Amino acid sequence: MNNKYLYIETFGCQMNVHDSEQMAVLLADIGYRLTDDPAKAELILINTCSIREKAEQKAFSELGRLMKLKEGNPDLIIGFAGCLAQHWGAKVYKRVKNVDLVFGTHNIHRLPEMVAAVQEERKKITQIDFYSEIHSLNIFAPPPKGSLSSFVSIMQGCDNYCAYCVVPYLRGREMSREPENIIDEIRKLTQCGVKEVTLLGQNVNSYGKNLEHGCDFVSLITKVNNVEGIERIRFTTSHPKDLSDGLINAFAELPKLCEHIHLPVQSGSNRILKRMNRGYTAEEYVEKVERLRAVCPGISITSDIIVGFPGETSKDYQETIDMMEKIRFDSLFSFKYSERKGTAAQALQGKVPEAEKRQRLKDLQVLQDRHTQEKNTALEGCVQEVLVEGPSRNSAQDVTGRTRSWKIVNFKGSPALIGKKVLVKISRGYLHSLRGEME
Ligand code: SF4
Image 1 (tube, rainbow, N blue to C red):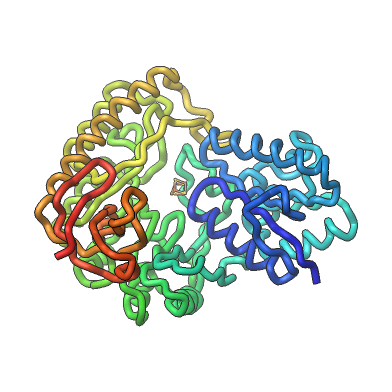
Image 2 (cartoon, rainbow, N blue to C red):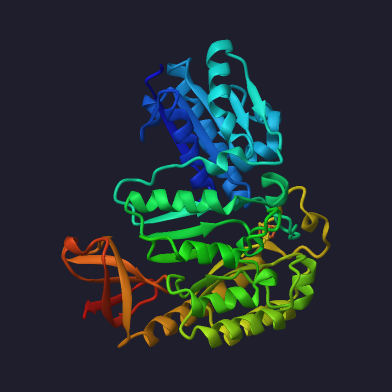
């Protein structure tokens, strides 16, 4: 068996991080050990993201940089994986000649055989087929030692075709994992010390649609809630159109389900939401947020917003600002619209000038900072349950952890608290964290 080094560089979302972990598990079976040093590696994989143009540029520039290592090591195998590999296929070789392996998001399970073929035959391999089942989803990747939290992939792909998004083309149609496999993975994670899981999927609210025996997302979370050793449950990402009453009520009914939801709204303008093909109106979104707050007071609501989508006028933009004022998100990921090839939005008229997009984003972020600061200040004097994750980066006397509502809290405490849930009285709310004292 080989005893060689593997270096993986991962771009993009948590889904990609998860895929990279599974690649490492598969390659360990044929003798590859992970290294942090690409210069030591016999196999380098770049796991790419194509969501934004910037991520694409970064991945190709990193590929170019790592290719230079081939000059001193001609046997080095370099593979290009993930969404960009899916999108570019064999055209990657035109852009970067000496890449050995290009494989897409449904082909991870074939990695050992692909690497062996490159090694033995020194020929280029390209695998970008889609399958009706994603074989790699059930590979168990043990969490890094000492992990308290772990992501658990419950589904792959997406059927929504939002006008700006490449995911359905690059990750394929929506497919859910069998609940038994998910629960089995979560039990194994608890045996490794994990106490908090985040159920992961492009649209977790539609989990189970393709499963024959019918287990929807609420039934799945209820099963996870019953797993001994799991203390906190989170999930991401939720599509507002599929947020059911059952899921809203679960926040009141399931004790381990944490009081936080990431619910991407993308725009506050109905005209733009329609052009984005999001499937809900601004009013419907606000109404769902109100229901969430009614059943679960104190729930933290975070969101995504895209500014400068084609056709977005200053009136549309103002409607987004008005919605932010009305809802007051706890925090927000905000982006300038970035055109992706092959999406429906590419053909839309009314491109917003770059300078205008930049200004809108800047103003929106100033507003969000104000709201985040207000939300965090409002917690001063409250007692919060904190799962202590580790030493604080800022002071050796402090430890750090998260509230159930996903806020970072730093407070004086010994490392013996790591892994425990403690009650902390918040003394100060900052923009990016809270300060407190243990009760
Ligand atoms: S829901 Fe829309 S934005 Fe999210 S992955 Fe699917 S197509 Fe993309």
